[in-house]
Image 1 (cartoon, rainbow, N blue to C red):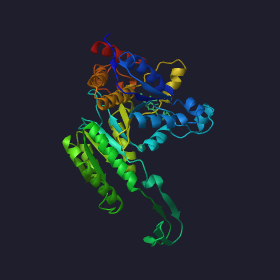
Image 2 (image 1 turned 90 degrees about the vertical axis):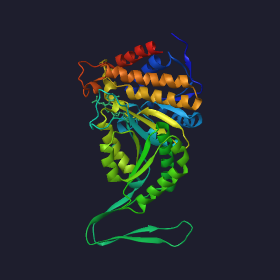
Image 3 (image 1 turned 90 degrees about the horizontal axis):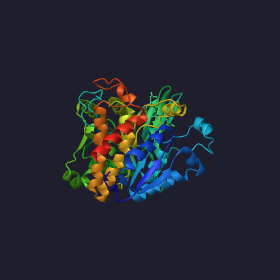
Image 4 (image 1 turned 120 degrees about the vertical axis):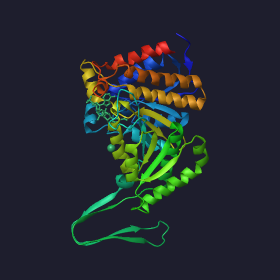
Length: 403
Ligand code: NAP
Ligand code: MG
């Protein structure tokens, strides 16, 4: 075999749990170590180690991504009551993704991998639709109440500096009803737009944003205006790489996305992103084909698969049964991190290597070798599915010939 390719700067590696932890090791052993000389700053975010370190390891890993700029993460368990018992945890630790997101002040973008013989549910979709969800505020940080009797609802703002109180009338209730108060902050919206701009520049795709500013002239109008201001600030950079910005009414955006051939970053307000990301994910086929990247406003990147630890397959594996778990989104997390590293380090050979893996993965599926989740939706149909390790071996075999 030829000499290994050197990755100039370190990549932060965050290991995880269950079936994805097993896949993670296969990927490193078969697709990374044999070909690359890479300094991986390793953090074990497996649930046991998070518990042993009182979750300090998650904070350390996030700070390492801040320092080095690029990270790659395996899926991790977010403990619930059942997991606390299963792993005898000291406490119900917070979601690692939430911890990392708040340290990096990042936004998550989800992007599907397009493969010819895995047709999307929407026939016109030919290129990925990337969804960026603003994951702060609105109804997710709201106060609400059911009122049971006639009365008046008001919205009150009290200035911290002691100025005049602002009181707005909401409704005079003649009988029972519901009320809600919600908010967002300019800082959070700006960070979101900056992360969208960074990701659109990275992906070289247009940015679409939709809101309902005809109805919500202040709230949604504020989002529209902050978007427009930040886009204006980055105007030259965006024009240089021909990235365009398009504002639409949200209902128009939904209709346009369905009719489009894809290839845009769809920036969504919190609720829209929650709902639309699930629609887009199922529209493109399998969770095993959905990648995810956390982008901070100052341009730090963490790559991962959008799916979880695939617990059901892990328990089958532990019982000695065979599994057919799709490793594609996890492999693309690695290639995403390597490509980003290559771009920052200006190392074209690393970029070519990452692109070669991606091409080979897609060719492997297109030539009929795929895991069960894909076999169920492939067109033309295939007669058998590959086991978890068998698929990665098929990719590794082709990779050896290619480099
Ligand atoms: P999941 O791991 O995404 O799996 C749900 C189901 O989706 C699987 O049982 C499987 O369906 C299918 N699936 C997902 N990924 C697949 C793949 N790569 N290949 C084939 N099939 C795949 O969600 P979950 O079971 O609800 O969650 C398990 C754990 O993951 C939880 O502890 C949760 O906290 C964690 N989680 C972590 C992250 C993250 O770290 N980013 C995200 C989500 C969830 P079939 O069983 O029908 O084959
Ligand atoms: Mg959702």
